[in-house]
Image (cartoon, rainbow over all chains, first blue to last red; front, side):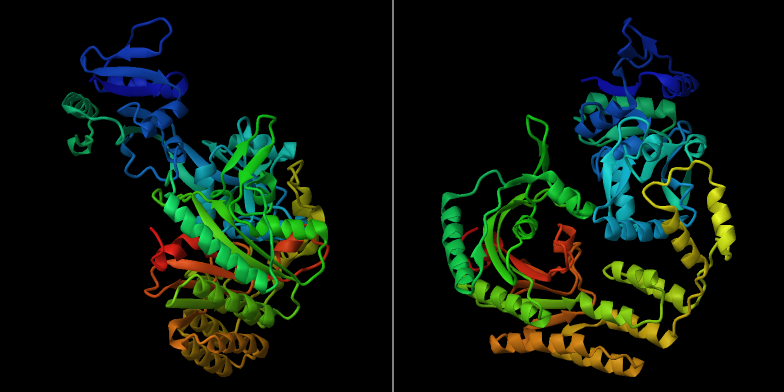
Length: 237
Length: 369
Protein backbone atom coordinates (compact mmCIF):
# COMPACT_ATOMS: atom_id res chain seq x y z
CA UNK A 1 0.00 0.00 0.00
CA UNK A 2 1.25 3.52 -0.76
CA UNK A 3 1.14 6.27 1.84
CA UNK A 4 -1.68 8.72 1.14
CA UNK A 5 -0.71 12.30 2.00
CA UNK A 6 -3.25 15.06 1.43
CA UNK A 7 -2.33 18.71 1.06
CA UNK A 8 -4.56 21.73 0.41
CA UNK A 9 -5.45 22.04 -3.26
CA UNK A 10 -5.35 25.82 -3.59
CA UNK A 11 -4.69 29.19 -2.04
CA UNK A 12 -2.09 30.39 0.43
CA UNK A 13 -2.04 27.09 2.32
CA UNK A 14 -1.08 25.28 -0.92
CA UNK A 15 1.72 27.79 -1.66
CA UNK A 16 3.09 27.53 1.88
CA UNK A 17 2.96 23.72 1.71
CA UNK A 18 4.93 23.74 -1.55
CA UNK A 19 7.50 26.02 0.11
CA UNK A 20 7.76 23.79 3.18
CA UNK A 21 8.30 20.74 0.97
CA UNK A 22 10.87 22.59 -1.17
CA UNK A 23 12.79 23.56 1.99
CA UNK A 24 12.88 19.86 2.91
CA UNK A 25 14.22 19.05 -0.56
CA UNK A 26 10.92 17.60 -1.79
CA UNK A 27 9.56 18.67 -5.15
CA UNK A 28 5.92 18.15 -5.89
CA UNK A 29 5.09 16.95 -9.40
CA UNK A 30 1.52 17.41 -10.45
CA UNK A 31 0.90 14.77 -13.02
CA UNK A 32 -2.48 15.51 -14.47
CA UNK A 33 -4.10 18.58 -15.80
CA UNK A 34 -6.98 18.58 -13.34
CA UNK A 35 -4.50 18.62 -10.50
CA UNK A 36 -6.10 16.34 -7.95
CA UNK A 37 -3.04 14.12 -7.60
CA UNK A 38 0.71 14.62 -7.40
CA UNK A 39 3.85 12.63 -6.66
CA UNK A 40 7.12 13.22 -4.88
CA UNK A 41 9.70 11.68 -7.29
CA UNK A 42 12.16 11.11 -4.44
CA UNK A 43 9.49 9.22 -2.45
CA UNK A 44 7.78 6.76 -4.83
CA UNK A 45 5.77 5.16 -2.01
CA UNK A 46 3.95 8.40 -1.27
CA UNK A 47 0.84 9.39 -3.17
CA UNK A 48 -0.10 13.04 -2.79
CA UNK A 49 -3.78 14.05 -2.94
CA UNK A 50 -4.90 17.63 -3.37
CA UNK A 51 -8.06 18.24 -1.35
CA UNK A 52 -9.82 21.16 0.29
CA UNK A 53 -8.62 21.93 3.83
CA UNK A 54 -11.94 20.80 5.29
CA UNK A 55 -11.95 17.53 3.32
CA UNK A 56 -8.46 16.75 4.64
CA UNK A 57 -9.69 16.95 8.24
CA UNK A 58 -12.62 14.61 7.62
CA UNK A 59 -10.52 12.19 5.51
CA UNK A 60 -7.99 11.94 8.38
CA UNK A 61 -10.80 11.29 10.85
CA UNK A 62 -12.32 8.61 8.62
CA UNK A 63 -8.92 6.98 8.01
CA UNK A 64 -9.19 7.49 4.23
CA UNK A 65 -5.70 9.03 4.14
CA UNK A 66 -2.60 8.45 6.28
CA UNK A 67 -1.24 11.97 6.56
CA UNK A 68 -2.64 15.40 5.90
CA UNK A 69 -1.76 19.06 6.16
CA UNK A 70 -4.56 21.34 7.30
CA UNK A 71 -5.49 23.87 9.96
CA UNK A 72 -5.68 22.81 13.60
CA UNK A 73 -9.05 24.60 13.77
CA UNK A 74 -10.50 22.25 11.13
CA UNK A 75 -8.94 19.18 12.76
CA UNK A 76 -10.35 20.01 16.19
CA UNK A 77 -13.73 20.92 14.69
CA UNK A 78 -13.94 17.65 12.72
CA UNK A 79 -14.98 15.75 15.89
CA UNK A 80 -15.50 16.63 19.57
CA UNK A 81 -12.64 14.34 20.56
CA UNK A 82 -9.81 13.70 18.13
CA UNK A 83 -7.54 11.98 20.68
CA UNK A 84 -6.85 8.44 19.55
CA UNK A 85 -8.15 9.22 16.06
CA UNK A 86 -5.87 11.96 14.75
CA UNK A 87 -2.35 12.81 15.96
CA UNK A 88 -0.98 16.33 15.41
CA UNK A 89 2.66 15.61 14.57
CA UNK A 90 4.10 18.99 13.58
CA UNK A 91 3.10 22.64 13.72
CA UNK A 92 4.19 24.06 10.38
CA UNK A 93 4.54 27.75 11.20
CA UNK A 94 2.06 29.09 8.64
CA UNK A 95 -1.68 29.44 8.22
CA UNK A 96 -1.98 31.29 11.53
CA UNK A 97 -5.53 32.12 12.59
CA UNK A 98 -7.45 32.40 15.86
CA UNK A 99 -10.91 31.00 16.52
CA UNK A 100 -12.56 33.70 18.64
CA UNK A 101 -15.81 34.74 20.30
CA UNK A 102 -16.85 38.16 18.99
CA UNK A 103 -19.71 40.47 19.94
CA UNK A 104 -20.95 43.83 18.68
CA UNK A 105 -19.08 46.99 19.74
CA UNK A 106 -22.55 48.20 20.65
CA UNK A 107 -22.34 45.94 23.70
CA UNK A 108 -20.06 48.33 25.58
CA UNK A 109 -20.77 46.48 28.83
CA UNK A 110 -19.51 43.13 27.50
CA UNK A 111 -15.78 42.40 27.42
CA UNK A 112 -15.44 38.92 28.98
CA UNK A 113 -17.09 35.52 28.78
CA UNK A 114 -18.57 36.21 32.25
CA UNK A 115 -20.26 39.33 30.85
CA UNK A 116 -21.54 37.29 27.91
CA UNK A 117 -22.91 34.71 30.34
CA UNK A 118 -24.91 37.47 32.10
CA UNK A 119 -26.26 38.75 28.80
CA UNK A 120 -27.18 35.23 27.62
CA UNK A 121 -29.13 34.58 30.84
CA UNK A 122 -30.88 37.96 30.69
CA UNK A 123 -31.77 37.41 27.02
CA UNK A 124 -33.22 33.95 27.72
CA UNK A 125 -35.27 35.31 30.64
CA UNK A 126 -36.56 38.28 28.64
CA UNK A 127 -37.30 36.63 25.30
CA UNK A 128 -38.01 33.06 26.41
CA UNK A 129 -35.58 31.86 23.78
CA UNK A 130 -31.85 31.50 23.60
CA UNK A 131 -29.41 33.96 22.21
CA UNK A 132 -27.99 32.77 18.87
CA UNK A 133 -24.32 32.13 18.18
CA UNK A 134 -23.48 31.91 14.46
CA UNK A 135 -20.48 29.74 13.64
CA UNK A 136 -18.87 27.15 11.41
CA UNK A 137 -17.23 25.77 14.56
CA UNK A 138 -20.11 24.12 16.45
CA UNK A 139 -17.95 21.60 18.31
CA UNK A 140 -15.29 24.08 19.39
CA UNK A 141 -17.99 26.55 20.43
CA UNK A 142 -19.88 23.99 22.54
CA UNK A 143 -16.76 22.86 24.35
CA UNK A 144 -15.58 26.42 25.02
CA UNK A 145 -18.96 27.72 26.17
CA UNK A 146 -19.37 24.67 28.43
CA UNK A 147 -15.92 25.31 29.89
CA UNK A 148 -17.07 28.86 30.67
CA UNK A 149 -20.33 27.63 32.17
CA UNK A 150 -22.57 29.25 29.55
CA UNK A 151 -25.70 27.21 28.86
CA UNK A 152 -28.26 29.79 27.69
CA UNK A 153 -27.42 30.01 23.99
CA UNK A 154 -27.94 28.10 20.80
CA UNK A 155 -25.76 27.58 17.78
CA UNK A 156 -26.95 28.57 14.34
CA UNK A 157 -24.78 27.00 11.64
CA UNK A 158 -23.15 29.50 9.35
CA UNK A 159 -21.95 28.58 5.92
CA UNK A 160 -21.09 31.94 4.41
CA UNK A 161 -19.73 35.16 5.86
CA UNK A 162 -20.19 34.64 9.58
CA UNK A 163 -19.04 38.19 10.42
CA UNK A 164 -22.18 39.54 8.73
CA UNK A 165 -24.62 37.55 10.86
CA UNK A 166 -25.18 40.33 13.43
CA UNK A 167 -25.88 42.99 10.83
CA UNK A 168 -28.16 40.56 9.01
CA UNK A 169 -30.02 39.85 12.24
CA UNK A 170 -29.51 36.08 12.07
CA UNK A 171 -27.42 35.88 15.27
CA UNK A 172 -26.39 37.97 18.28
CA UNK A 173 -22.87 36.58 18.77
CA UNK A 174 -20.38 34.91 16.44
CA UNK A 175 -17.54 32.44 16.78
CA UNK A 176 -15.27 32.86 13.79
CA UNK A 177 -11.71 32.65 12.56
CA UNK A 178 -9.56 35.75 12.32
CA UNK A 179 -5.92 36.44 11.58
CA UNK A 180 -5.64 40.23 11.89
CA UNK A 181 -9.05 41.09 13.34
CA UNK A 182 -9.60 43.61 10.52
CA UNK A 183 -12.73 41.93 9.11
CA UNK A 184 -14.28 41.82 12.58
CA UNK A 185 -13.49 45.50 13.20
CA UNK A 186 -14.93 46.48 9.82
CA UNK A 187 -18.18 44.82 10.85
CA UNK A 188 -18.38 46.63 14.20
CA UNK A 189 -17.33 43.57 16.20
CA UNK A 190 -14.82 43.02 18.99
CA UNK A 191 -13.13 39.91 20.37
CA UNK A 192 -13.85 39.16 24.04
CA UNK A 193 -10.77 39.52 26.30
CA UNK A 194 -10.89 35.84 27.25
CA UNK A 195 -12.66 34.79 24.05
CA UNK A 196 -9.81 33.18 22.12
CA UNK A 197 -10.90 29.55 21.73
CA UNK A 198 -7.92 28.30 19.74
CA UNK A 199 -4.70 29.76 18.33
CA UNK A 200 -4.55 27.72 15.17
CA UNK A 201 -1.92 27.11 12.48
CA UNK A 202 -1.34 24.57 9.74
CA UNK A 203 -0.37 21.16 11.12
CA UNK A 204 0.98 17.95 9.69
CA UNK A 205 -1.41 15.37 11.12
CA UNK A 206 -1.53 11.57 11.04
CA UNK A 207 -4.68 9.48 10.95
CA UNK A 208 -4.66 6.80 13.66
CA UNK A 209 -7.74 5.17 12.16
CA UNK A 210 -6.11 4.61 8.74
CA UNK A 211 -4.59 1.22 7.90
CA UNK A 212 -0.85 1.28 8.60
CA UNK A 213 1.16 -1.58 7.06
CA UNK A 214 4.93 -2.07 6.89
CA UNK A 215 5.19 -0.18 3.61
CA UNK A 216 3.22 2.91 4.67
CA UNK A 217 5.01 2.84 8.02
CA UNK A 218 8.41 2.91 6.29
CA UNK A 219 7.32 5.61 3.81
CA UNK A 220 6.04 7.70 6.71
CA UNK A 221 9.36 7.34 8.57
CA UNK A 222 11.28 8.50 5.47
CA UNK A 223 8.98 11.48 4.96
CA UNK A 224 9.15 12.45 8.65
CA UNK A 225 12.97 12.32 8.52
CA UNK A 226 13.01 14.76 5.58
CA UNK A 227 10.51 17.08 7.28
CA UNK A 228 12.40 16.95 10.61
CA UNK A 229 9.61 15.18 12.50
CA UNK A 230 10.54 12.87 15.40
CA UNK A 231 10.44 9.26 14.15
CA UNK A 232 8.68 8.28 17.41
CA UNK A 233 5.61 10.06 16.00
CA UNK A 234 5.21 7.60 13.11
CA UNK A 235 1.89 5.87 13.88
CA UNK A 236 2.35 2.28 15.05
CA UNK A 237 1.59 -0.67 12.78
CA UNK B 1 -25.31 1.39 20.36
CA UNK B 2 -27.38 -1.75 20.72
CA UNK B 3 -28.98 -2.76 17.42
CA UNK B 4 -31.48 -5.27 18.86
CA UNK B 5 -33.54 -6.03 21.94
CA UNK B 6 -33.99 -9.68 22.87
CA UNK B 7 -37.65 -10.78 22.69
CA UNK B 8 -37.50 -11.99 26.30
CA UNK B 9 -36.18 -8.60 27.45
CA UNK B 10 -38.94 -6.74 25.65
CA UNK B 11 -41.56 -9.02 27.20
CA UNK B 12 -40.08 -8.43 30.66
CA UNK B 13 -39.95 -4.68 30.03
CA UNK B 14 -43.58 -4.67 28.91
CA UNK B 15 -44.69 -6.57 32.03
CA UNK B 16 -42.75 -4.12 34.19
CA UNK B 17 -44.29 -1.16 32.35
CA UNK B 18 -47.80 -2.51 33.00
CA UNK B 19 -47.01 -2.74 36.73
CA UNK B 20 -45.62 0.81 36.83
CA UNK B 21 -48.42 2.39 34.81
CA UNK B 22 -51.03 0.62 36.97
CA UNK B 23 -49.44 2.12 40.08
CA UNK B 24 -49.29 5.59 38.51
CA UNK B 25 -52.95 5.33 37.43
CA UNK B 26 -53.96 4.25 40.96
CA UNK B 27 -52.30 7.42 42.29
CA UNK B 28 -54.29 9.60 39.87
CA UNK B 29 -51.66 10.04 37.14
CA UNK B 30 -53.21 10.04 33.65
CA UNK B 31 -51.25 8.35 30.89
CA UNK B 32 -49.80 10.51 28.11
CA UNK B 33 -48.43 9.21 24.83
CA UNK B 34 -46.43 11.85 22.92
CA UNK B 35 -45.16 10.79 19.48
CA UNK B 36 -41.58 9.67 19.14
CA UNK B 37 -41.06 12.25 16.39
CA UNK B 38 -41.61 15.79 17.64
CA UNK B 39 -41.08 19.22 16.07
CA UNK B 40 -37.36 19.90 16.54
CA UNK B 41 -38.02 23.46 17.70
CA UNK B 42 -39.77 22.16 20.83
CA UNK B 43 -36.45 20.88 22.16
CA UNK B 44 -33.97 23.06 20.34
CA UNK B 45 -35.38 26.56 20.73
CA UNK B 46 -35.90 26.45 24.45
CA UNK B 47 -33.10 24.18 25.57
CA UNK B 48 -29.50 25.02 26.09
CA UNK B 49 -26.73 23.32 24.18
CA UNK B 50 -26.45 20.44 26.66
CA UNK B 51 -29.84 19.07 25.56
CA UNK B 52 -29.34 20.18 21.94
CA UNK B 53 -26.09 18.28 21.52
CA UNK B 54 -27.74 15.11 22.79
CA UNK B 55 -30.83 15.38 20.60
CA UNK B 56 -31.16 13.49 17.32
CA UNK B 57 -32.63 15.74 14.67
CA UNK B 58 -33.69 15.03 11.13
CA UNK B 59 -35.32 16.80 8.23
CA UNK B 60 -38.38 15.21 6.68
CA UNK B 61 -38.71 15.04 2.87
CA UNK B 62 -40.76 18.26 2.82
CA UNK B 63 -38.08 20.12 4.76
CA UNK B 64 -39.57 20.23 8.26
CA UNK B 65 -37.12 19.79 11.14
CA UNK B 66 -38.03 16.95 13.47
CA UNK B 67 -36.41 15.45 16.55
CA UNK B 68 -36.47 12.02 18.15
CA UNK B 69 -37.75 12.94 21.61
CA UNK B 70 -34.86 13.11 24.14
CA UNK B 71 -37.43 13.04 26.95
CA UNK B 72 -41.21 12.93 27.40
CA UNK B 73 -41.41 15.69 29.99
CA UNK B 74 -41.20 18.55 27.49
CA UNK B 75 -43.88 17.27 25.05
CA UNK B 76 -46.20 16.45 27.97
CA UNK B 77 -45.68 19.88 29.55
CA UNK B 78 -46.22 21.53 26.16
CA UNK B 79 -49.53 19.70 25.66
CA UNK B 80 -50.67 20.75 29.13
CA UNK B 81 -49.88 24.40 28.32
CA UNK B 82 -51.69 24.22 24.96
CA UNK B 83 -54.77 22.57 26.42
CA UNK B 84 -54.84 24.83 29.46
CA UNK B 85 -55.67 21.77 31.56
CA UNK B 86 -57.06 22.37 35.08
CA UNK B 87 -54.43 22.29 37.83
CA UNK B 88 -53.07 20.49 39.68
CA UNK B 89 -52.55 17.93 36.89
CA UNK B 90 -50.96 14.51 37.19
CA UNK B 91 -49.46 12.81 34.14
CA UNK B 92 -47.57 9.54 33.54
CA UNK B 93 -45.76 7.98 30.59
CA UNK B 94 -43.74 5.03 29.38
CA UNK B 95 -41.75 4.75 26.17
CA UNK B 96 -38.43 4.96 24.42
CA UNK B 97 -36.31 8.12 24.41
CA UNK B 98 -33.26 8.88 22.28
CA UNK B 99 -30.09 10.57 23.46
CA UNK B 100 -26.69 10.88 21.91
CA UNK B 101 -23.92 10.10 24.42
CA UNK B 102 -20.99 12.21 23.25
CA UNK B 103 -18.44 10.73 25.63
CA UNK B 104 -19.64 7.13 25.85
CA UNK B 105 -19.96 5.54 22.44
CA UNK B 106 -20.85 2.18 24.04
CA UNK B 107 -23.92 3.58 25.84
CA UNK B 108 -27.30 2.89 24.23
CA UNK B 109 -28.77 5.86 22.35
CA UNK B 110 -32.31 4.49 22.74
CA UNK B 111 -33.76 3.40 26.07
CA UNK B 112 -37.12 3.09 27.76
CA UNK B 113 -38.27 5.53 30.42
CA UNK B 114 -41.33 5.52 32.63
CA UNK B 115 -42.20 8.56 34.66
CA UNK B 116 -44.63 10.92 36.33
CA UNK B 117 -45.10 14.68 36.35
CA UNK B 118 -47.09 16.74 38.84
CA UNK B 119 -48.04 20.19 37.56
CA UNK B 120 -49.50 23.14 39.45
CA UNK B 121 -49.39 21.81 43.02
CA UNK B 122 -49.12 25.06 44.97
CA UNK B 123 -47.68 23.39 48.08
CA UNK B 124 -44.17 22.63 46.83
CA UNK B 125 -43.08 20.56 49.85
CA UNK B 126 -46.15 18.41 49.38
CA UNK B 127 -45.51 17.97 45.66
CA UNK B 128 -41.85 17.07 46.28
CA UNK B 129 -42.90 14.48 48.86
CA UNK B 130 -45.54 12.98 46.59
CA UNK B 131 -43.09 12.47 43.71
CA UNK B 132 -40.30 11.14 45.94
CA UNK B 133 -42.71 8.66 47.56
CA UNK B 134 -44.10 7.58 44.20
CA UNK B 135 -40.61 6.97 42.79
CA UNK B 136 -39.82 4.70 45.74
CA UNK B 137 -43.16 2.92 45.50
CA UNK B 138 -42.56 2.41 41.77
CA UNK B 139 -39.13 0.77 42.07
CA UNK B 140 -40.49 -1.40 44.88
CA UNK B 141 -43.50 -2.39 42.78
CA UNK B 142 -41.03 -3.41 40.06
CA UNK B 143 -39.37 -5.70 42.59
CA UNK B 144 -36.36 -3.66 43.77
CA UNK B 145 -35.68 -4.38 47.44
CA UNK B 146 -32.55 -2.42 48.23
CA UNK B 147 -31.45 0.96 46.92
CA UNK B 148 -29.65 4.15 47.89
CA UNK B 149 -30.85 7.72 47.50
CA UNK B 150 -29.16 11.05 47.06
CA UNK B 151 -31.08 14.25 47.67
CA UNK B 152 -30.20 17.84 46.94
CA UNK B 153 -32.02 21.14 46.89
CA UNK B 154 -31.19 23.98 44.55
CA UNK B 155 -33.72 26.05 46.49
CA UNK B 156 -31.55 26.00 49.59
CA UNK B 157 -28.64 27.59 47.80
CA UNK B 158 -30.98 29.99 45.98
CA UNK B 159 -32.55 31.17 49.23
CA UNK B 160 -29.11 31.62 50.76
CA UNK B 161 -27.99 33.75 47.84
CA UNK B 162 -31.23 35.77 47.90
CA UNK B 163 -30.39 36.59 51.51
CA UNK B 164 -27.08 38.18 50.53
CA UNK B 165 -26.63 41.90 50.22
CA UNK B 166 -25.62 41.78 46.56
CA UNK B 167 -26.82 43.34 43.29
CA UNK B 168 -29.45 41.13 41.57
CA UNK B 169 -27.23 40.11 38.65
CA UNK B 170 -24.57 38.85 41.05
CA UNK B 171 -27.19 36.74 42.77
CA UNK B 172 -28.35 35.23 39.50
CA UNK B 173 -24.72 34.70 38.47
CA UNK B 174 -24.10 32.72 41.66
CA UNK B 175 -27.28 30.68 41.19
CA UNK B 176 -26.51 29.93 37.55
CA UNK B 177 -23.09 28.57 38.40
CA UNK B 178 -24.19 26.72 41.50
CA UNK B 179 -23.44 23.32 39.95
CA UNK B 180 -19.96 24.12 38.68
CA UNK B 181 -17.33 22.73 41.04
CA UNK B 182 -15.01 25.45 42.29
CA UNK B 183 -16.59 28.24 40.27
CA UNK B 184 -18.93 29.59 42.93
CA UNK B 185 -16.06 29.52 45.41
CA UNK B 186 -14.00 31.64 43.01
CA UNK B 187 -16.87 34.09 42.50
CA UNK B 188 -17.42 34.39 46.25
CA UNK B 189 -13.72 34.94 46.78
CA UNK B 190 -13.80 37.77 44.25
CA UNK B 191 -16.82 39.34 45.95
CA UNK B 192 -15.34 38.80 49.42
CA UNK B 193 -12.23 40.72 48.46
CA UNK B 194 -14.11 43.47 46.69
CA UNK B 195 -11.68 43.49 43.77
CA UNK B 196 -14.24 43.70 41.01
CA UNK B 197 -12.67 46.38 38.84
CA UNK B 198 -14.72 47.91 36.07
CA UNK B 199 -13.30 49.51 32.96
CA UNK B 200 -16.52 51.36 32.24
CA UNK B 201 -16.91 55.05 33.06
CA UNK B 202 -18.76 55.81 36.31
CA UNK B 203 -20.67 58.74 34.88
CA UNK B 204 -24.03 58.21 33.10
CA UNK B 205 -23.31 60.83 30.44
CA UNK B 206 -19.93 59.24 29.68
CA UNK B 207 -21.60 55.84 29.26
CA UNK B 208 -24.11 57.38 26.81
CA UNK B 209 -21.26 59.05 24.93
CA UNK B 210 -19.30 55.79 24.78
CA UNK B 211 -22.31 54.06 23.24
CA UNK B 212 -22.80 56.92 20.73
CA UNK B 213 -19.18 56.51 19.69
CA UNK B 214 -19.80 52.94 18.47
CA UNK B 215 -20.98 54.14 15.06
CA UNK B 216 -23.22 51.69 13.27
CA UNK B 217 -22.20 48.60 15.29
CA UNK B 218 -25.21 46.25 15.23
CA UNK B 219 -27.40 46.29 18.39
CA UNK B 220 -27.49 42.47 18.18
CA UNK B 221 -30.73 41.82 20.01
CA UNK B 222 -30.32 44.36 22.81
CA UNK B 223 -31.89 47.79 23.15
CA UNK B 224 -29.93 50.91 23.99
CA UNK B 225 -31.70 51.07 27.35
CA UNK B 226 -30.70 47.48 28.20
CA UNK B 227 -27.05 48.08 27.34
CA UNK B 228 -26.94 51.32 29.33
CA UNK B 229 -28.70 49.79 32.33
CA UNK B 230 -26.24 46.92 32.54
CA UNK B 231 -23.23 49.17 31.87
CA UNK B 232 -24.30 51.48 34.70
CA UNK B 233 -24.88 48.59 37.09
CA UNK B 234 -21.44 47.18 36.28
CA UNK B 235 -19.75 50.56 36.62
CA UNK B 236 -21.40 51.36 39.93
CA UNK B 237 -20.52 48.03 41.40
CA UNK B 238 -18.43 48.05 44.54
CA UNK B 239 -18.96 44.59 45.90
CA UNK B 240 -18.16 43.72 49.42
CA UNK B 241 -19.50 40.67 51.14
CA UNK B 242 -19.11 39.76 54.79
CA UNK B 243 -16.32 37.17 54.82
CA UNK B 244 -18.26 35.07 57.35
CA UNK B 245 -21.24 34.82 55.04
CA UNK B 246 -19.13 33.95 51.99
CA UNK B 247 -17.31 31.33 54.05
CA UNK B 248 -20.59 29.85 55.25
CA UNK B 249 -21.82 29.41 51.67
CA UNK B 250 -18.61 27.69 50.63
CA UNK B 251 -18.78 25.36 53.65
CA UNK B 252 -22.45 24.67 52.95
CA UNK B 253 -21.64 23.60 49.40
CA UNK B 254 -19.13 21.13 50.86
CA UNK B 255 -21.74 19.31 52.94
CA UNK B 256 -22.43 15.78 51.76
CA UNK B 257 -23.43 13.20 54.36
CA UNK B 258 -26.22 10.88 55.45
CA UNK B 259 -29.33 13.08 55.46
CA UNK B 260 -29.80 13.42 59.23
CA UNK B 261 -26.16 14.39 59.80
CA UNK B 262 -26.21 16.73 56.79
CA UNK B 263 -29.35 18.57 57.93
CA UNK B 264 -27.91 19.00 61.45
CA UNK B 265 -24.67 20.34 59.95
CA UNK B 266 -26.55 22.78 57.73
CA UNK B 267 -28.60 24.06 60.71
CA UNK B 268 -25.45 24.57 62.80
CA UNK B 269 -23.70 26.34 59.93
CA UNK B 270 -26.61 28.72 59.23
CA UNK B 271 -26.97 29.50 62.93
CA UNK B 272 -23.30 30.45 63.21
CA UNK B 273 -23.55 32.67 60.14
CA UNK B 274 -26.78 34.25 61.40
CA UNK B 275 -28.84 33.19 58.38
CA UNK B 276 -32.42 31.91 58.75
CA UNK B 277 -33.77 29.59 56.06
CA UNK B 278 -36.71 28.16 57.97
CA UNK B 279 -38.94 27.36 55.00
CA UNK B 280 -36.22 25.47 53.12
CA UNK B 281 -35.19 23.50 56.20
CA UNK B 282 -38.81 22.67 57.01
CA UNK B 283 -39.19 21.34 53.45
CA UNK B 284 -36.06 19.20 53.89
CA UNK B 285 -37.47 17.83 57.17
CA UNK B 286 -40.76 17.05 55.47
CA UNK B 287 -38.98 15.02 52.80
CA UNK B 288 -37.09 13.11 55.47
CA UNK B 289 -40.42 12.36 57.18
CA UNK B 290 -41.81 11.03 53.88
CA UNK B 291 -38.85 8.68 53.58
CA UNK B 292 -39.21 7.44 57.16
CA UNK B 293 -42.91 6.82 56.67
CA UNK B 294 -42.05 4.62 53.68
CA UNK B 295 -39.65 2.65 55.85
CA UNK B 296 -36.53 3.93 54.04
CA UNK B 297 -33.46 3.73 56.28
CA UNK B 298 -32.13 7.34 56.59
CA UNK B 299 -28.59 5.95 56.73
CA UNK B 300 -29.06 4.88 53.06
CA UNK B 301 -30.04 8.41 52.07
CA UNK B 302 -27.37 11.01 51.36
CA UNK B 303 -27.91 14.75 51.21
CA UNK B 304 -25.41 16.56 49.03
CA UNK B 305 -25.74 20.33 49.10
CA UNK B 306 -24.11 20.89 45.72
CA UNK B 307 -26.09 18.10 44.05
CA UNK B 308 -27.95 20.09 41.42
CA UNK B 309 -27.92 17.83 38.42
CA UNK B 310 -26.50 19.12 35.19
CA UNK B 311 -29.91 18.90 33.54
CA UNK B 312 -30.69 22.48 32.79
CA UNK B 313 -34.23 22.89 33.93
CA UNK B 314 -34.17 21.87 37.60
CA UNK B 315 -34.92 24.69 40.04
CA UNK B 316 -35.41 23.13 43.50
CA UNK B 317 -35.54 19.72 45.09
CA UNK B 318 -33.58 17.07 43.14
CA UNK B 319 -32.99 13.39 43.77
CA UNK B 320 -31.51 10.27 42.29
CA UNK B 321 -32.18 6.67 43.20
CA UNK B 322 -29.40 4.15 42.67
CA UNK B 323 -28.92 0.43 43.14
CA UNK B 324 -27.77 -0.96 46.52
CA UNK B 325 -24.08 -0.38 45.68
CA UNK B 326 -24.76 3.10 44.32
CA UNK B 327 -23.17 2.15 41.00
CA UNK B 328 -26.09 2.69 38.62
CA UNK B 329 -28.69 5.45 38.55
CA UNK B 330 -32.13 3.84 38.25
CA UNK B 331 -34.38 6.87 38.67
CA UNK B 332 -34.02 10.59 39.04
CA UNK B 333 -36.10 13.67 39.20
CA UNK B 334 -36.82 16.97 40.78
CA UNK B 335 -38.52 20.32 40.57
CA UNK B 336 -38.52 22.41 37.39
CA UNK B 337 -40.75 25.39 38.11
CA UNK B 338 -39.61 27.49 35.13
CA UNK B 339 -40.31 25.08 32.28
CA UNK B 340 -44.03 25.71 31.69
CA UNK B 341 -43.60 29.46 31.36
CA UNK B 342 -40.74 28.78 28.97
CA UNK B 343 -43.19 26.66 26.94
CA UNK B 344 -45.69 29.50 26.79
CA UNK B 345 -47.78 29.26 29.97
CA UNK B 346 -49.18 32.72 30.70
CA UNK B 347 -48.16 32.53 34.38
CA UNK B 348 -45.83 30.40 36.50
CA UNK B 349 -46.86 26.75 37.00
CA UNK B 350 -45.03 24.60 39.55
CA UNK B 351 -43.76 21.30 38.26
CA UNK B 352 -42.04 18.30 39.79
CA UNK B 353 -41.48 14.86 38.33
CA UNK B 354 -39.29 11.84 38.01
CA UNK B 355 -38.20 9.34 35.37
CA UNK B 356 -37.29 5.69 35.82
CA UNK B 357 -34.65 4.08 33.65
CA UNK B 358 -36.69 0.91 33.29
CA UNK B 359 -34.08 -1.18 31.45
CA UNK B 360 -31.52 -0.61 34.20
CA UNK B 361 -34.23 -1.24 36.78
CA UNK B 362 -34.97 -4.60 35.18
CA UNK B 363 -31.27 -5.49 35.25
CA UNK B 364 -31.02 -4.42 38.91
CA UNK B 365 -33.83 -6.77 39.96
CA UNK B 366 -32.27 -9.57 37.90
CA UNK B 367 -35.17 -9.63 35.42
CA UNK B 368 -33.00 -9.66 32.29
CA UNK B 369 -29.80 -8.30 30.81
